[in-house]
Length: 113
Length: 115
Image (cartoon, rainbow over all chains, first blue to last red; front, side):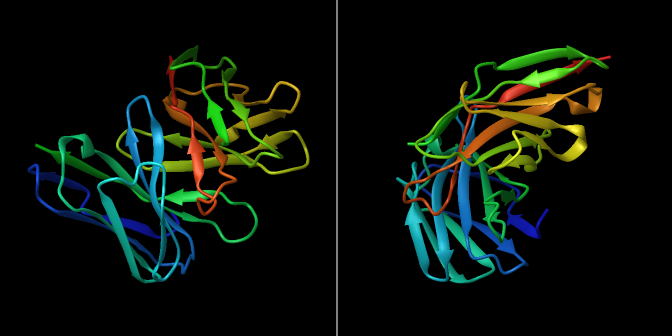
C-alpha cells in the first residue's frame, strides 16, 4: 500500500461547512495527488503536488484547495461543502523511478447533506 | 489530451474461463498505460503497466495485458478467471500535459465471475 493513509475514512457533513481531508505517506515521495471517484466518471484529478508548497490544479479543482507544508502530508480542503462534493476521495503517490505508476490510499467517503 | 475508454460497463464470465476487459486509448505520442483493480470499499491496486518494449505485459494475480498500437488498445486478460477476480477494473493513461504526470482513468468495468 506504499505507506499511504487517509483520514478520516468516513465523514458526514452539512452543506456550507468546511472540511479537510488528510493524506499521509511514509516513503518520502515527491509527487502526491488527490482524485475523486464518482460512478460513471472513474477517477478525476482534483489537485496535485510536486513538492513542499508546490501544488497545482487538476481537472475538477473548483471548490477545493490543497496544502503541503511537509513532504509526508497533503491536505485537501473543501472551503464550503456542497452536495455535489459527495464522493469518495483518494490520495495517491507517484512511484519513484521511470514507471509513473501511482499507488493509492484507502480512500475517504464524504457525504454532504 | 490523453484519454482511455472502457467500452463495457460490465463483463460476466464463468469461473475457469478466460476473461478479457477492454480498453482503448487516444494519445499523442507513445502512451504509458496502466491497469488497476478496485475491490469493494478499497483503494485502487496497481496491476500492470506498459511503457515500452514487449507488447505482452504480465502483472499481478496472473493478469496480463496486450498492447496493440494499430488498434490503439490495451486489453486486460487472464487465462482462467477466479470468483475472487470479481471487482472493478480501471484502465488509465499517463497525462502528457501540465498535470504532474497524473493519470487519466476510464470509467471502469465491473467484472463478475460466477462459480
